[in-house]
Length: 70
Image (cartoon, rainbow, N blue to C red):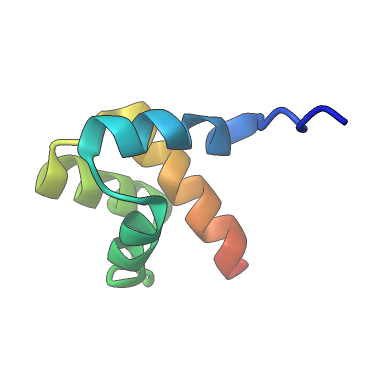
């Protein structure tokens, strides 16, 4: 049986891990620190603190907020 292809924001995760050298769990814990901030404030946090590109930051924040029910 073939693996189900990952789509949507989570499809960025392999390239995020490769480019920034940290597992997705690291990024989810980092976002937990700013969980009370608005979506774009969280994106800005990742961009400014880690020099992350907008698309990667947005994908992480989207999945984080979805998992947190935000």
